Amino acid sequence: MTSMTDPHQGQFRLSMLLYDSRYRSMTIQIVALIGFLILVFWLISNTAQNLAELGKEPSFGFMSEPAGYDINQRLLEYNSQDTHLRASLMGLLNTLLVAVMGCIAATIIGVIVGVLRLSPNWIVSRLAAVYVEMFRNVPVLLWIVFIMAVLIETLPAPSAFRKGEASMALWDSVAITNRGVYIPEPLFSNSLGNIHLLGQSSLRFDVSLDLLAIAAVFLAGILTSMLIKRRADAIQESTGDRPATWYWRLGVVVIPTVIVLTILGLHWGYPELKGFNFKGGTYMRNSLIALWLALSLYTGAFIAEIVRAGILAVSKGQSEAAGALGLRPNRTMSLVILPQALRVIIPPLISNYLNLTKNSSLAIAVGYMDITGTLGGITMNQTGRELETVLLLMAVYLAISLTISSVMNWYNESVKLKER
Image (cartoon, rainbow, N blue to C red; front, side, top):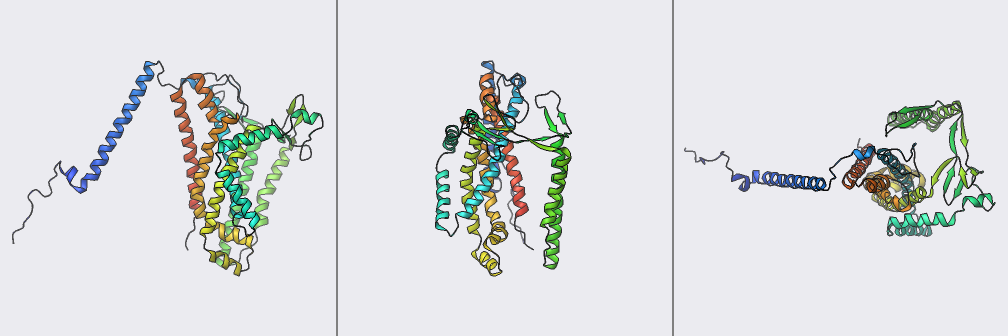
């Protein structure tokens, strides 16, 4: 029997790159990639040529020049003669501070309001709905400015405390003024001192050995508590009976931490009115408080709807079964409903954390010096290095966003429901 085969079968021809379905998609992708790379190369070369003609060749040397401006709210030592790099570091720390505080507060607010939205009490559920609709449908910038104005106009000035027209709160330990809030500052009589890292460079910072010791003991207690929980889970898995371990878990965290604080001689430094303002204690400016409250309340409204949707996604039979077993509504919510709702809640929650962090760039509207106000604001205006500062700013926000996303995705994997 004669084999009827194509003599050209198996031979590769250039026309096959377009007409053969096996190669067509790859050809199109390669051509598109080459075109994109050519476009990027042209943009970079054209930008570099234009900057060279203006006498502004791309360079990051300006970051080592003196900044020449002050930063009102800062976590590390800084003065106006420090470099732009250190000023940017102060702004970055301020951004991270408001982002962490905002994410924590927004989560607490969102969970509480989201649960209240499903309350059988009509008044409670309607009030929660009003909060959600009011904050979600007004731009966050307006809330930032509004809260800042309320703090300035309604709170007493420091002079009112001297005249007796206002008084400090919490047993004369907290001063709430229209310039900011002064809270007690933790001090140590038997301090272990500080470690100076990175010498005299722009990235220098001091690490308190006291805080390191406290953090180490506290984290060790947390790890021990997790081990106790894991052992209790194993006992419950094998016997069906879960031993009471809450007092052990609480004790291994609290008792060693209290002992370390006692050894270090913890005491509090309280704010005092001296001259025209308060001195001592920890100072939180109105700009920080306004930004924190606005971002927390605004993002909390979105998180509340995410929590409500996550709870509604859990089958009603789960709560009915829990009720049949004798669990109270609050225990049913914490032990049955919310753990299952997390698989629905966490993915959109990540986006809201990212949005809160990026929305913190509006801080300059109330004078809070974050990374946008320092590197992307004063530094850019003083040096005229628009391209370099914007690129650095984009890289910083990209790194923060990817870090948040990675941590939350890891947490999402750890709490995901696993079948037996």
